[in-house]
Amino acid sequence: MRQPIVIGNWKMNGSLLANETLLEALLSSLEELEGVQIAVCPPMPYLAQVKQHLRDYHIVLGAQTLNEHDVGAHTGEVSAAMLKDLGCQYVLVGHSERRSLYGESDLAVTEKFAAAQAAGLVPVLCVGEKLAERQCGDTEAVVARQLQVVIGTLGVEALSGSVIAYEPVWAIGTGETATPDQAQEVHAFIRAWLARHSAPLAARLPLLYGGSVKADNAAALFAQPDIDGGLIGGASLAANSFANICRAAGHH
Image (cartoon, rainbow, N blue to C red; front, side, top):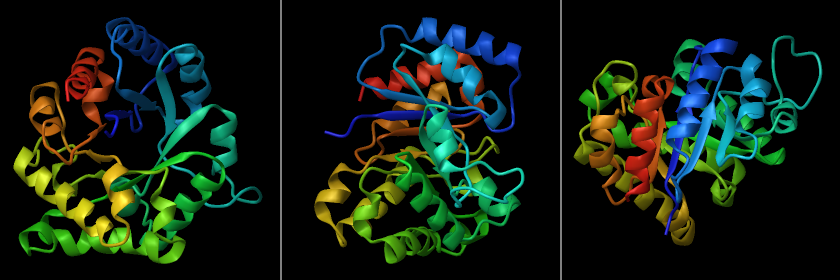
């Protein structure tokens, strides 16, 4: 049985005051929820503040990206060891915005994945197709390519202790959501593709859906057999919405 996971990606949003208000509302509304692993990924400058608020609570800390190097002359960058030092458990790797806006290649994503694991973080590997790729029928080819670079370089067992998030790029921040059937189809493809490399790994690896998940569509998405939770963007900035999404994950 795979434990449901819900990860809130705050992207480049927040302030000391806004974070405190959000977390207080979130913690009080999720006090009773059990059986769901919940994480929040604030912007880098707020990791320590958020960690302080989450102390003694079952919500854990994640980061939105990292640098693939351990230490050294990389001005403005943050290493996996630093994230670990600040109390992070998860780190997003290869989010579509990192790939499209900051030019992260499949290989760069693989290096970041390896660096995260080496430091004891759980990498959340984001994969997904753009609208044009979906319209051409290339969804499965694109997702397989993004996964293949990681396992071709690091071996399939490297995925053990990681999480995969399928995020159709055309549904991120657009208000468009893949229907539960569309999302399930790709999740089932990912699990079957992984099973060709390692059936036991494919059976236990958590697959999250990301792409305009909201309180009102979360339950239908999480009811799908191969969707084990969500990577939540905009809705994670509203305590009520995020709490409702977490509760929806807890019912499956």
